[in-house]
Length: 401
Ligand code: PMP
Image 1 (cartoon, rainbow, N blue to C red):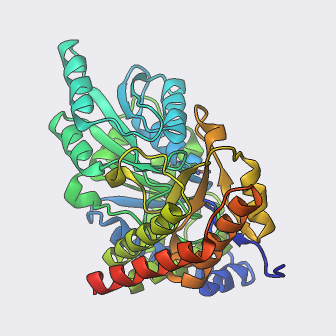
Image 2: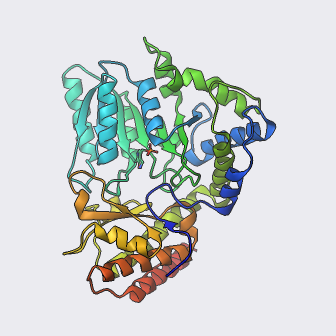
Image 3: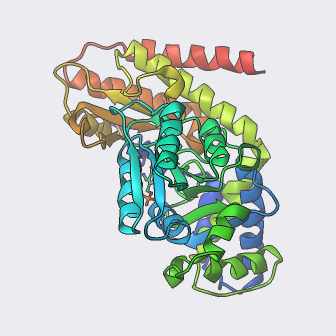
């Protein structure tokens, strides 16, 4: 049995790099201290590059989590009576629908069976239906990668469709940003939001989002101000000050997390944003080769809609959620199902950020899953799965070189 600390391979929070850990573990800086001001300002500049956003867009780093980033976006963009379209791919899209309804929006909810993705033509149909009724959608919302199914939408045509209909587009990148291709300015997206604890590679506790000029203007035009703690107007002067390397205050930021964020974003940029996307795609294909040898099938219905940040895998016949505990016995923590309609039918393995650069950690994960399956009575060949993983990784590296 291993005495190593359990390896965290859930779809967030994730294992973080030694440098990120070190930055986080330093004594807490004050929010006006020069090293914090520098780390905050650098983080905002680095977000612009990771998000590929325009100079006029505004990055925000706010205490909270991905849910905070979602709520802050809704609070600033949506007014009672607004029409909103949700391209719904699962649990987190459902959360967005609920937030929009509570904000008084009239929601057009485009759902699918778990693992599938609504087509762009369905979104087009929703715009057309609203326009026939004399309405215009205020914003279209989509989850870039829905962590409950590992289904990934293609944000580009959705952002273009929204633009063409005079509508804002918002993408929840909580399980995608920093790993899945996204070009905020080139694609014309208006908000791309995430949290610190997934492919961004820092501990949990920060809500991160970038708002386009049009999204900022939508807040400016509101009749009623949003809650103070989520108001773009409360935070924008603080972000502007930090980016100009000046101290500022609206509410105390989790300063250790900001120190960690500056390092994790620097690591992404040192590797290169595109290189990072490619590395996630490579690692996901190699993990899939192992899953195939182990006889595991994916929840996403089409290969091109499968996320690179996690695998959502159906339990084989006669295996249930006790598999997750058996994998943990081998020192690797994976997650159970989350989508309410198929929760008992599958489990999830995260592969993003620091771990994807560590072949040994990915191999340990495959071995633990194989062990769990064997302990559940399934005949599997763990060594062959690891070999398939390594061969795919090598072939991919040669191809990508
Ligand atoms: N959206 C997606 C796609 C997520 O995966 C998550 C978290 N798993 C959230 C939103 C909510 O983020 P948080 O748990 O950080 O509030």
